[in-house]
Image 1: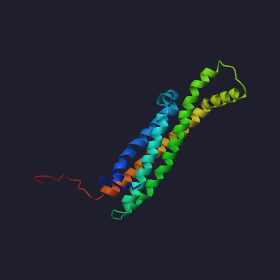
Image 2: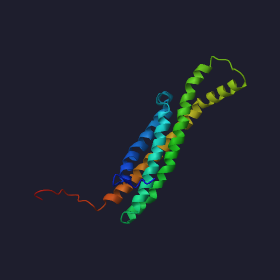
Image 3: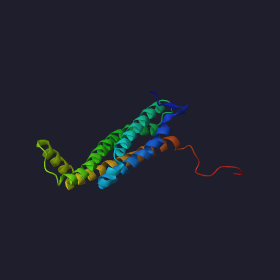
Length: 184
C-alpha cells in the first residue's frame, strides 16, 4: 500500500497530526486506567482499540515519512528526523501491550468481589479465583501503574522529540522572524 500521497498531497504531514494527538491521548488514558480500575472498566475495550489505532497510525506515519524522505532535499535535519522516526514504534507497541494488560486487570476487579462469597466449584474454580486475586492485588496494580507511567512518559517524550526535529527540518531558515506585509 502506498501511503506517500493522499489526494495529491504527501501523506506524512497528515498522519503526523493524528499521531501527535493519539500517542499522548492513549498514554494519558493508559495511566488513568492503571490508576483507577473503574475507568478501565468504563472504557472497556476502547482502551486497547485506541492503542491499536495509535500503533497503526504511527506505522503509517513512519512509512509515509520514509517515502517523503526520498523526495525532499537532503539535509542533516531531515536525516536526523528520519533516524528518530522509527524509534516511536516500540513505545506504541508497549502502549498496546500495557493497555491490554490494564484492561484485563480492570476486568478482574469486579469478579473478585463476586467470588468472595462463592464456594470453589471444582478444580478450575479455585485456580481461576487465585489468578483473579493475584491480578487484583495491590503489588500487581502498583507494578502496572509504574510500568504504565514509564511507558506513557517515554512515548510522549519521543513524540515531542521527533516532532521537534521534524518541525526544524521543515521550517528552519524558511521564514522571517519579523512581520512582512503591505506597507513594510
